[in-house]
Image (cartoon, rainbow, N blue to C red):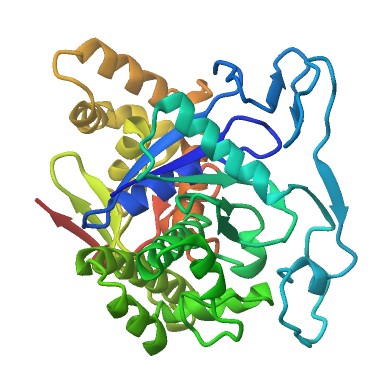
Length: 408
C-alpha cells in the first residue's frame, strides 16, 4: 500500500519543510507493508489541467480558487478569514455532539485562514492527475490552512484522499514536536481505511463520545491528548477490524506508530519531573543520532552540524569556540565520514570556515543545531543537549555521558 504525503507551495498553507520531512522520516521508520512517499504541489511550475479551478499568479503571489467555475488569471482571490472570539469555539469541531466544557484561558489563535473541505480534496486530485497516481493509492495533503469544519483532518469522497491540518498543535501539546501528532493523524485515517469499507462508514463510525480510542471524534479538540496518550484501539473497533478481514501487518505497523508517538509524548512530560533525559545512541559509521526514549526519533543534522555536535560529545570538558582551530584535524576526520571520498579539499575548506570565529558560518551552524535539538527533545529538556556555555568560557554539552551510547 502506497501513501503519498504532500504539501503545497502556496505561502498561506505551506507546512514548515523541516516538520514535513520529519513526519516523512518518522513514518518511514515504521516496518510494514505501508510505504510512505513524499510529494509536492509546486504552483510555480506545474502545468494547467483542463478541469482545473486553481490558478496561481506567480508575479503577484496571489491564489485564486473556485469549486464550480473558472477564474480570470488577473483576479485576486483571498482565503477566508475567521475570527475566534473565545477558546471554546477555536477548539470545537463542528458536529452533532454538544459539549459543556468550561472556558479555559484565552491563549489561542484569534484568527486564521481557512477553506472548505472540497478545496483540499481538489488539491489531492490535482496531485494525482499531474503525477499519474493510481486510484488505489492514498494521498494526504498536509496543510497549515484551516478548514471550514475546524477538523484535524478528513477523507475525500473517493475514499483515498485526505487532508491533515498541521497548524496549532502547540496549543494542544505545549512541548511536543508537531511531527508526532501529524504522523498520528495520518495513521488514524489509515486505521479507519482498513476498518471500514467506504468513506461514509468511516465518518459514521467515529466515536461521538471520547473513550481514549484512536477512533474518537474529539469534538472538544483538547480531548485528542487523551487518545494520543493511550495510543489504543477500543474493543468495539477491534471487532469491526475482525469483521472486515483486515491484514494484520497493516494493523501492526499502525499500532507501532501509535506506540512511538505515545512514548514520545509521555517521556517529554515525565522527563523533567523524573530528572531523566533521553539517551542518545550514536549508531554506525555514519553516526546516526537516535533518541530511543523519544520513540527512537532521529536527530537529523547535516554533515557539518553533525561533525560539530559529535566533536562536543567527545569533549565533555568543553572547548572554547576560539580554540576549535586547535582541533581542526579531529574535526576534519569526523567530517570526512559524511562526504564522498576523494574530496579532501572540500573537507578542509568546510572545517576552516567552521573554526574561523570571524566567519558567520560557525554561528549559523550552532544556531541550526540549537533549533533542531529544541524541536527534537522539547524546550524543557533541550538545555541538557545543547552546545552551550558563557561567553569566553568553554562550550560543552551538559548531558551526562552515561546517557550517550555508541553502537556499530
